[in-house]
Image 1 (cartoon, rainbow, N blue to C red):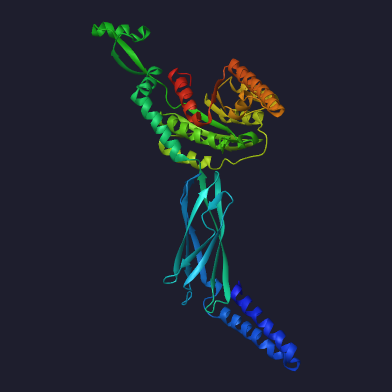
Image 2 (image 1 turned 90 degrees about the vertical axis):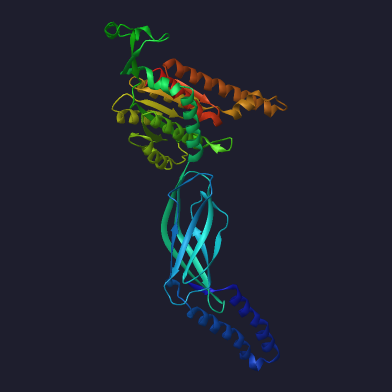
Amino acid sequence: MIYPTRLAILAALAGAPIALAIAGFLPGLWYIGLIWSCAVVLLVVADGALGPRPAAATAEIELPGTVSVGAAFEALAKMHFDAEQAPSSVEIALGMASILEANKNVEIVQINERNGTGHFELTPLRRGTAHFPRIWIRWRGPFGLTWKQRVINIDAGVAVLPDIETAHRRAGEIFRRHALQGLLLQIDRGDGTDFDTLTEYKPGMDKRAIDWKQSARHIKLHAKEFRTERNNQIVFAIDAGRQMSDPIAGLPRLDRAVSAMLQNAWISLKLGDRAALFSFDSLPRLASGFVAGTRAFGELQRLAAQIDYSSEEPNYTLALATLSRRLKRRSMVVLITEFTDLTAADFLIDAVSRLMHKHLLMIVVLRDEDLETFATHEPVSTDDVTRAVTAAALLRERLLVLTRLRHLGVNVVESEHDRLGDRITAAYLDLKRRNLL
């Protein structure tokens, strides 16, 4: 595409007063006033014909494999001119998804030896896949009277993951702390079901573990040590429905749930268990297979980036029934969800009661700190009283639902938004220590 610049338009308009003056004072020579405009038009045509054509420009974008939400990254727009003559500089603009924020919309790139690179600093505002459908390139002609522009379709993208560095670092801190305290050793050896080794009996050990036959042979008391069963299946089921998109302390509940899920998935893989990811709203949206070993953690990261925000209500009955059909052996299901009305909670309780016949279930919810603030805030006006009464009623309904779930035998975790991952980890390690997985 070739079109005139602002300079060409202003130059053409500058001849209008001259043409009007000639037409007014010398009507018989009115055509002389058109000479300026015709000269500008000829210069514009010549400027468009000289230099490289728009088709001579090619471009591509270089992106990292994955990026973290809220963390700035750099995208490189590399371009090349096939023609012998190339402009000294070009303007580059990226077509990109709305989940990205750029520090500048247009980059001016200097061309050296027919090549140039534009640097764009971008910040992801939410998770998902950030698409880059096209690149705009334009440059001026030799006289500066025309723009030569080309739109290049690139269809590139980058996966925007949760803040993995923070989740990974937090998981490592928890793992090291528990390891230093001997808790992981206690989980791995001591109260499991798989025989590990025979050791000399020491005060404090379970007397039921004494092997009397081996003790008689060695003329010393010996006890059996067992290893906690590994290879347990942990499914992280994430509700991606409407209420999970609501923000809490500035971030959607869904983002906090995904970050906590990744933190605990890394810990479970580190402890020898297998992890899988399941996401749903009104329909099951994502269901992964089980992976094992910390090397497979990257696969869970990529899958987590595909969990999108939804405006639909969650269908617990369909989602948990689908999940139950996929599970071929006893598994631990960690369901991270949110509910505000008793109708949705009744569907949740019905679906959970059927799933618990075969599997171990943990339900995780975030404390609604806004409701708690409204309920405890000292009222000043009638509106404050109304808000306080409504908030207190909602909190009572919430407590009733959580109590019913606990009576069913569900492991319920209600957490603050900034301690969600730690709360799930503590509950998971406790269940593993008690050999309930």
